Image (cartoon, rainbow, N blue to C red; front, side, top):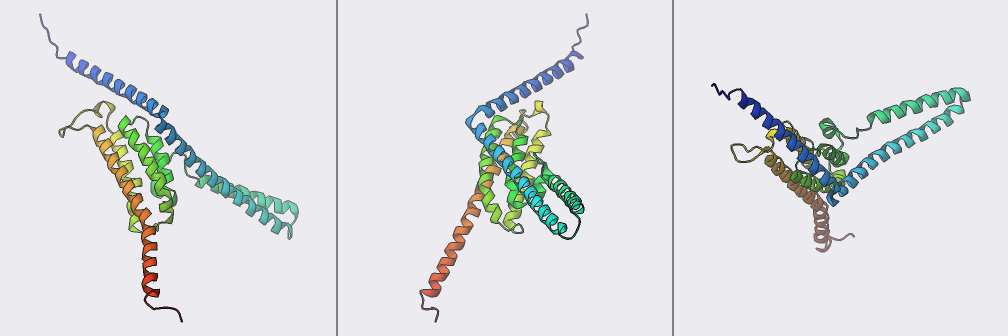
Length: 254
């Protein structure tokens, strides 16, 4: 009797790998559902809706400005041309402006290119939406960190609006949000589902590296917010000290 289990071993191994992959996918979906039902998940969803609403308001404001400009153009043309000609020209102008505004409007879930190209003043808003689009399938510890990162990004927004886009601080923040964060998440997604919880030579799994990397980025966002928040305080303190030294030392206006 020839008991040769050779061909069966690879088949069993493949079956176990497939089953493990399905289990991981099911667990990821369950974690995502729990996250959505949690208070933190609802708060994150609220911030995402607010970010999308702000984007929509910007588009509507631009459309309203285009409509006002078209009306002014119609009023000017009506004084020197036939009403029908003026209406046709203004209608074509309004259509052109509408197409330009809609075409230049950023996508709902921007990719990495949109993050790189986003103006500094709206970079954090774009990042919040990008992170929301990437959360599906992330492990639960990573989801909790992304919720914290959403709060950090919200806090950074007013500081970036006042920051010089050409400054080293702006370049550092942009690299952190638009390059290092997507690199980390994309690198983890490129790993097969069945291998994401397998320990490597260093004793850590790819999920461990993802969570640790997100935690470091979250800490760096917090530090950037603190530094940028202190800048106006330092400036007013320096200006106040300068005035004290100048006018309290007898250097008064004649």
